Amino acid sequence: MNNLNFNKLNKTFIVAEIGVNHEGDVNCAKRMIDLAAKSGVDAVKFQTFTAENYVSRKHDERFKRVKKFELNYDDFSLIQRYAKKKNIIFFSTPLHPKDINTLKKISPIIKISSGDLTYLDLIKNAALTNKPLILSTGLGDKKDIKNAVSVIEQDRPNIKKKGELLIMHCVAAYPTPENEVNLKNIEWLKQNFNYPVGYSDHTLGIKACELAVAYGAVVIEKHFTYRKENQVFHDHKISADKKDMTELVNNIRNVEKFSGSYERKIGKSEKKMFSHLRRSVYARRNIPEGKIIEYEDIILLRPAKGYGPENLKTIIGKKAKKFIKIDSLIKKIHL
Image (cartoon, rainbow, N blue to C red):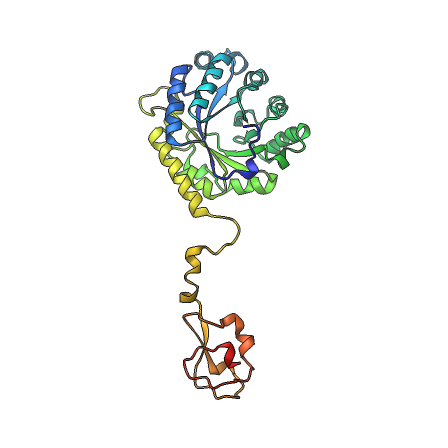
């Protein structure tokens, strides 16, 4: 998986962001991997941390909750192996430089969360793993993103060429209001940083993810849960369940079909319509042999069977070698 190239993805890379929706229960995490695999996503993503290096103890309630959600290296190793059995990629977001050591052997991709866009020491340590990186940009302005990218490029000068960095458009609001999703920012990120761009979604529903693909996102990340209803932890409410994620995957694959290629091409079905829809040059009236053909002598009509409008210079001003009957298609033998 270390050869992942974000420049050359042949389809949208879809990530089910389990995050901490397992709430510290490895069996729950495995259950969600089962559901994610059945929905057709390419990867599942988690968060790796120790509460002491993540949240201040002074925020007692939050600290206790985060502590409860912790998983250790053995837990993640088990989860990684389980995901592999299910033919789905496991990766995670480290929330402290020490957590990168936890993930080095088991996470083929390292993602930097939006909250850590300015945590340059963490970003530098992630870059030094030489693994493909995903940089999420929620809460960040152009300067923040530029600083983070610069830190990565200092240690990985060929990272752009190798396709090992993806910048993720993200709005860190839970849920994100529809009028703040700003999918046009996908193109802005492409133009300003010249890297592949993905979209990390925090809206209710799946429509924004589908539209993001049409806007050019090559990676889609959507929070994922086994059940949205009757949950205390807030992330479940903005997450997709198996039904939602299956629908999202299917819809994204359809968007890919509709999007086609960037290069202008005439498809097989369209080629069949050339004769039916294009025009050819016909005689508007009888044209005697030897007459110099004028514009008033011809008319452009469907179907296209010979000379088209683009060939008028070949016809106008030429002497008719033969008599051309009214309504006849003008051919090479007439000129």
